[in-house]
Length: 305
Image (cartoon, rainbow, N blue to C red; front, side, top):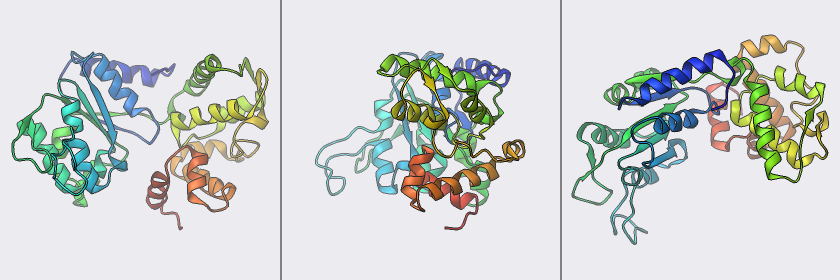
């Protein structure tokens, strides 16, 4: 996790300290802030280094798929289960399991997850015998679990189990100096892959990168640099090589927008939808997020379809 931000340096010290323990960690932060990288950092600095690190985004799992993915299943457990399958907790045994967007799990799966934390065992789908497991659990979400508990979408007992150590990952727009540092880190990485090498950035592009509110955070910044490498040529990254939404369309009240990340994200979504002709799939691709994430964020931001 590259950073020059004093705020993030303080975060790294927290990660180092918590890595020495076996406490369950809950990472909070917007989409694309680097929560999985933080989980990997905890794992690599812990006594479980060298053991498995298994991760899954729970938002991508249907209710039917979630149980099988996490706990595995036995042959004949359901139609299509033609053989035994090991789940994430078996694959991650002796190591670390990272569940991103844990708030998206259904209540029945939450109950089974609670058993893993309390009893250190689980029963595969269709199975009868519990299997012991030794894992460290790290979870993440962009939501308030307290609000999810109050809405009866998340178990309160599980919330207390997984957030022994809650850690907030700040959005990119609040991390002083990190946009420039990460930009050059991504450029250096892509320079190694070739065939293009970027050696300089035009001043206009620098201004765009520094002023943009980055609702998609680090993930979106990387997508912008990859876009430039894919479409541009030559050693200088020019304004014509960045995505249309950054190119010459900075709002006059950029500073105000940066202080209001929700409104900045609404503006970003509206522009992506305009460029995509109203097609949500294409708009999500422009933003560097999944269509499911786009729909969810539009609902949360109370944007009309």
